[in-house]
Length: 97
Image (cartoon, rainbow, N blue to C red; front, side):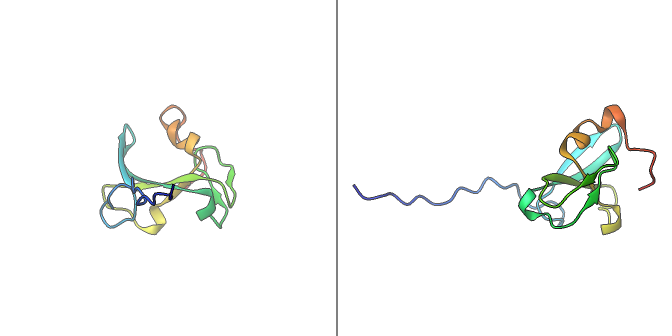
């Protein structure tokens, strides 16, 4: 029996405000645009503001920036997924962004 070629499904969300594939999130700390980054897409080392540890290349994580002013490149912060999720309990480290 011949193999059936099925079209590739695309479950990606629509682009938000011209900032790539981002989603809007709100919390007590304000409105944010958040984008998930796969491990294969990372090539640099970042410092997570939630735990102050490095996010090494190849590590999946999230990038978040304030939604109010659509944030510039300088406003973007790279967070471990767990740190971003628990930021409401902990908040950022005392280190200045």
